[in-house]
Length: 148
Image (spheres, rainbow, N blue to C red):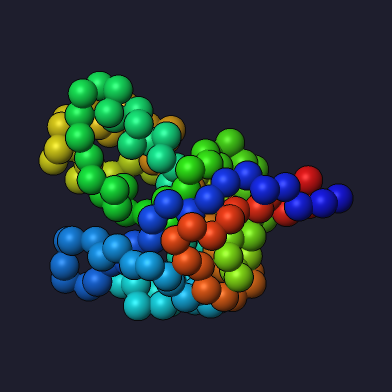
């Protein structure tokens, strides 16, 4: 088995408690409790990191709709689409290793931009992962699928 380079980090985000705005970061630090400084840190290890693909934003754009990066609630936006990965698959991103735990369900808050968005992104919002190897992730870091 080897590691396969599959993509690159485009953007990184965190959420702050009580603020709906997402904050873009140049780097984030992750440990077994999730993304440091994020409002979901130490809440649920199985859903501690949300990964989204640029494909989700392009899908919306194909319907002449605009949605700002970070709006899906992702911590990590990739130029790679990981949505077909099986639960248990491992991604090495920067210094951190993440294990896919579940697919993300659609939230109705996405309808604020347009009522069609939750339906359009039904299976394309993102995937949740837990941190199995702590470390730092920076914009531009490469993404590797481990064990393939």
